[in-house]
Image (cartoon, rainbow, N blue to C red):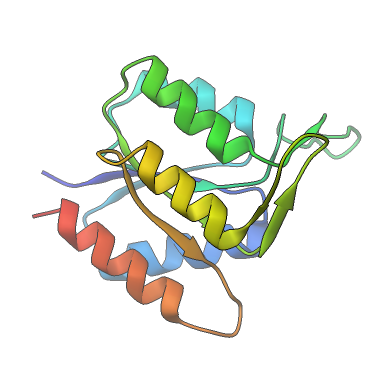
Length: 152
């Protein structure tokens, strides 16, 4: 049975690279894509995804050509992980971000401190917290290892 993956990423270039890595390495995988917090939450309860790849910072809504995408959620991926757990959705997830620091009006984290907090909080569901880079390939290798671990 093919693995089902949802990629939640607003940056088109980054999303295409993630999907490309997954498609090339896991040819039978069914990969869905969405671009915002709201579109992700509309898709997630509808299907049983084996893995959800979450960007940490997401717009609230999909951006239309003439509209803004609503408020930007610095911790959108973290919020989605909380909702998944609260609703007892069994999908596992990983976070992937290109930022080294995160802050809103209340909280401020380094990449490592946020990674440690979320991996500890979601031990059974969070399979990783990857640092995305356009110039380095470590994130690709980590992503492939994680997906190989759940597709056995």
